[in-house]
Length: 169
Image (cartoon, rainbow, N blue to C red; front, side, top):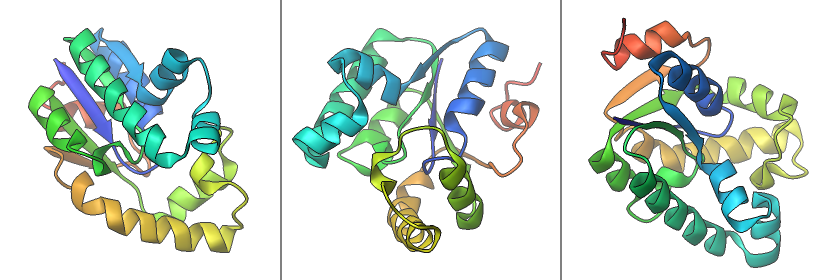
C-alpha cells in the first residue's frame, strides 16, 4: 500500500507521514529528502542554480522512482508536487492520496517559525508571505482537492488520519 500525503508547505505532511509510517509499519519517504539525496545537493541549490523548471523535472523523476521502488510506503510530497505535470494522477493511480488542508493564517505562522529551508519563501515579510501563500494556495487547491481523502491539518491527530483512511486498529 502506498499513501501519498499532499498539501501546502508546512501543512504537516512530513510530521504526519512519519507517525503514520511508524504506526502502520511502513517505510516513510519524504520526496524532498529523496531528491536531495539522489542529486547530492539541496532543493535550494537546485532552484538557485538550475531554476524552478529543472527542479520540477527532477521532482517528477523522483516521484516516478519512489513509486517504482516502493510497493508499500507513506510518501510525503512537496507542496507543489501535485500541481506539476500529471503528478497528481500518477499518485492517485499508484495508491491512496490524502490532502492535509490548513488555513492560510496557520500556514503563514508555521512557515515563519519553520526551521526547514523553504526556497519559495526566501526573504518574505509576514505580510508578503501571507499574500504569496494565499495566491499560491488558491492556484494549487483544485489539485489538492483531487485527493481521495481530506483532513483538516490544524491540530491533526494520527488516529483521525488513520480513521479517515479506514486503517484504524
